Image (tube, rainbow, N blue to C red; front, top):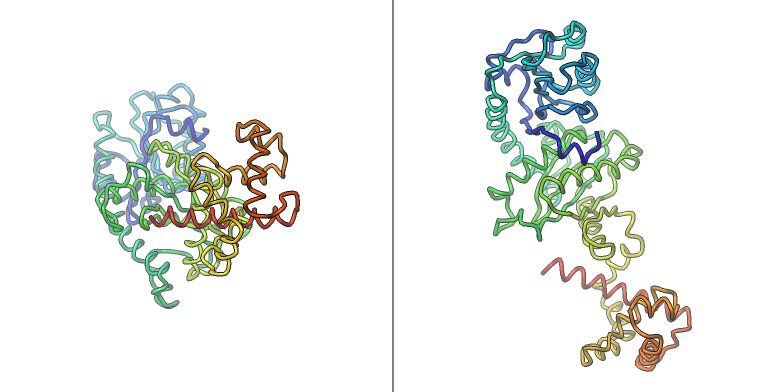
Length: 422
């Protein structure tokens, strides 16, 4: 099922704390009235999320640790489809299947056999048990458990990014949080400063921000293993892990697209995303944080909002961002562009810098530049003549063009940094 239609389907995801399993779920919710009819050997299966399934083509989104609740109304006349749901849940190492069989004459024998063979709990509940009787208690339980874990994860990631942790401390804390340090880790960063999600006046997670963490974690965890979601200032940070560097490089693009599609739909906003490189040394996560932040900043300004930008896409901008605060570089840029900047400042309609950028962007093509700026060719030629007179340089010289392009990009980098720090 495509993710877009998946987001519109009639189901509900609830993220459950790490200690939740089938046995515990049956003691804290409407499942207490349920009967385990098969798969009793799987009561210790952990529950990562819960979904109500009432649409016909949903087996594609069944994921590890998923507890599915359904009447099977969409499959009531199709026993093969009923069996396929259970088989797919087994294939993806799901948590279990809860049926309210009000629309079923009988549960197929093959489902009993599969549930017992693979220790996949198959549970039936009476018709009078409402979904809310199951979902609400699980939700309350998971919220507390997930909140406790979030606090540990938040402090852990804060310390790593600030480099306030030794290797031994990191190793011990990772063990407590069940993080496999042999995997490859990368960081996704989503900025929500301009979105109505942010209601907090400080940098620490507030009441609303805790809800953000809960919801984003619920959307992300079915898509990638060993996920940590935490907040830094106005950024939602998602730590993703993969078995190898090759897996990270080949899968992070698709995973990030799936994640942001879910997040965009949930919060009805077009977020920008920055992605770091993958790293095998967990203590180097602070480098991943810097890379994701830089990719987010530059990607949004250069390629526009709502884009997914990987650090490796930044190219020359990575170098220029480091040069922007260098004193000698600043003097060099000033010597090239100050006459144009001053002229534009004193003559608000001149737009010489804008004209120069467009001219360089089109490789000196007069026709394309005039079209891009929506000005007449004669107006453009006048401006170019003015530019050459002010900077006393020949725009037909390829070396001059290169110097001006680099200078303009450095100014752009300083502008990005100022905007994000302000």
